[in-house]
Length: 297
Length: 293
Image 1: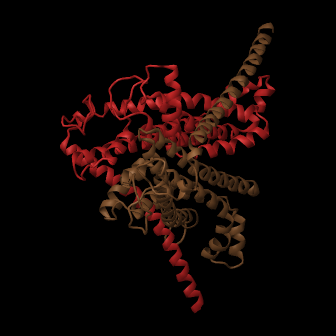
Image 2: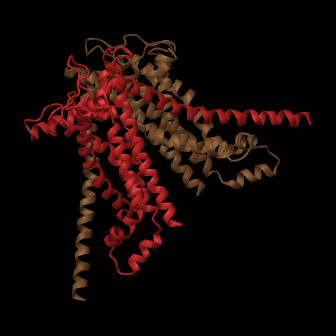
Image 3: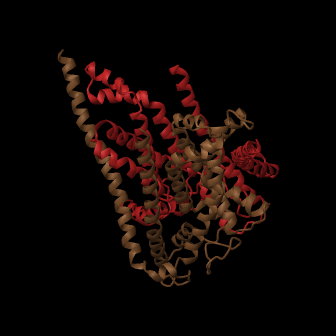
């Protein structure tokens, strides 16, 4: 009886420990939200939100301070658009090829390879962008600046392409085989079956891979810090230096900005916006899945 | 009839076109990466020797080495695992084994963890740097030290370990648990002797991926205050530090090409290590998945 009692205490202890772990992870998220929220709140006590949203310049580090977020947003957007152009459609086409056409051997070789590639640190991709891709592009376009949007954009695209391919391929392979067989039995060619039956059925998974690529591209830091420059600029020109939201945070962190100053708070408001964007994308993503589950029932 | 045949022919042509386009895309993406890595190798390999690995940073590029960064990275990995591994697995175990019955069962917590950690896994790494800066560096007053850096990275990779562990624990067949209960084992005994061992390859694979992520991250460390120039090997957890990716970044952003060759050489140390770790993790996971089928 004694033994059983001590054993159940032992059980209870571990159960409590694991429960604490779960609480810990929730606390982590709450603390993160609190930090970003509090510092952003302090920022908006000094800078009115209209100036933040509608000012056309971002110069918190200069004597003449302006706090318009638009130039940073536009910078992030330009790099992201280039990256997604490189990654989405090609990534999907390769995924279709791997799941529908390639031999089993090629697929079994490619899938792990893609995943290994997805693990290359971004600082290495930054090296590629700055020292290999930019000089090459400068030979093609002689007027191009050495910091620009297009080279980090392309490299960022190469970085997320394996991700898109890998996840889309999973989605395509999860489509029940009988759907494709029925299409083939009705006389569809392989490509027809693929584009008119399999891809529509796998669409939520494919969109989800696109969304993940989008959120990666927005939040990517090292490539753009190294190769895109540090000049926030309101304008669309892929060949000129610009600054993304993430690169701005790094720029401020590398300098000596005292805690509690308005410059210090700007990195939290920019970080908070990044956080909100990824949260939004993630929410859209999970709504996509729950809708689908609902309609299948 | 004729028209239908025609359309069939068109699809046939489209099919060939599609194959050509996608094979071209696949090979050109791989060829580009291969070319980039080759270029990196040509640039970095002349600098890569034993002195480079055991040397201290220097104002002169030809004397500079990566020892402080290497040791810093090792420390960071240790701290990161120490904190993220137990919490990640613990959370996964609670969610899968204890959240629906028992004294600590709580559906709300379960739901909260699910939603929060999935979102956390998608948060850009730089945002974790902000978290580290405020909480670990300033609020807990750890300063810009190895411990603060390791904790920041631990927060970053914990969701990865959680998600992988949860999948692995879920994949353990229910019959195994039933059999263990039938023999009179308690819930913790079942977990410790049966669930964890059979989930181990999956958990391990997730942990290796998480560690390789932590090794490669520069952005959060830069934000929480890793130094870009450290001329001594860090000793102890309260030491200022730099890490390999941070060192690479710092060399890369200098204008002199000699320093950029140093960056290439440091990448040649970092990259094979990470590729091997990722390869191992994926191999482990796939082997385990095949076994479970």
